[in-house]
Amino acid sequence: MTQTIRTVMIIGANGNIGSSIFKAIVESGKFKVSVLSRLESTTTYTADITVIKSDYSEESLVDAFKGQDAVVSALGAAGLAEEFKIIDACVRAGVKRFLPSEFSSNPQNAKAAALIPVFDLKVRVNEYLKAQESKGLTWTAVVAGVAFETALQLGILGFNIKTKEALILDCGNRPFSISNLSQIGNAVVAVLSKPEETANQFLYVHSFTVSQNEILAELENVTGEKWKVTESTTEAARTEGEPLFAEGDFAGLLLLLKAIFMGEGYGSNFTKDAVLANEKLGLPSQDLASSVAAVLAGISL
Ligand SMILES: NC(=O)c1ccc[n+]([C@@H]2O[C@H](COP(=O)([O-])OP(=O)(O)OC[C@H]3O[C@@H](n4cnc5c(N)ncnc54)[C@H](OP(=O)(O)O)[C@@H]3O)[C@@H](O)[C@H]2O)c1
Image (cartoon, rainbow, N blue to C red):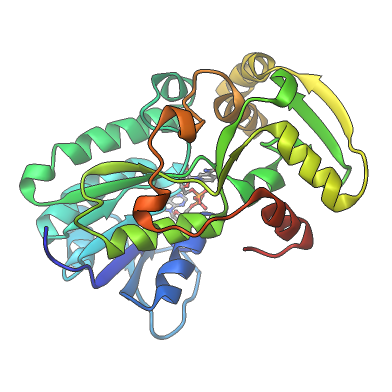
């Protein structure tokens, strides 16, 4: 692939992760940006952004993707199964690069895929994508670990910022990889800017790889207070989470995510379990101290 990427369509541009990706792509000033959204979606965009509403039929997707060099999916779990159809439509429309809605835990770890069906779905999407390479569609899966701001807000990291309480798992010393939302956006812009170097691969990125105890120390440092600490294990999170998750309880999903991000054997330490692409992508360095300070101040880096 020698062609420069100039036109980019983002799916899920208004989502938790997608809005950061959308912002980074627009602010880079490098691409003509369009958005694909559901018919019922009510998000509005500035006049320079082309918004195409779709019923997600394959024909409507093919029409939407014509003229796009790249399609970036940030679909949430509820829409993720549409990616097979989206990939078919990309091939038919002549799209050069597809970025699946990855941006999370290690997609090459079978233990994580076995615990949460949506992670297994992502594995199958990636397999499907690989099968399209001969048809001219290239792909890049950006793996970002824990989304820092989102995970802090949802309590996935075990910290309650309001009550200054911490739930420390497995003694809290195991490092795991974390990305600020802005870093996920930086990574996507870098992939789109370097299409040849990033074709047909998983790219693991982070802002930092740290342990719960290191995050706690920084939270205590910034708040100037000792936090109340309770201890548990990732195994307890998994065994408590599984039945809740099976009943459709969101709390169960959060517990399983805790186990995957902080437990042993889920491939969540990208400095050890993967090859980090930060340098290859030229990503800015981001550190825990300024990231914690930013979250507590209610601003994004
Ligand atoms: N690393 C982490 O900690 C972390 C955290 C959260 C998410 N993620 C990952 O990031 C990706 C995006 O997740 P998200 O939480 O940002 O997604 P989200 O906010 O739940 O949804 C993103 C968008 O998907 C579109 N969509 C299409 N079909 C849909 C359907 N049937 N139901 C609902 N929405 C639909 C909607 O956009 P329109 O309204 O424009 O149609 C929606 O705003 C996922 O792969 C997820 O696993 C990672």
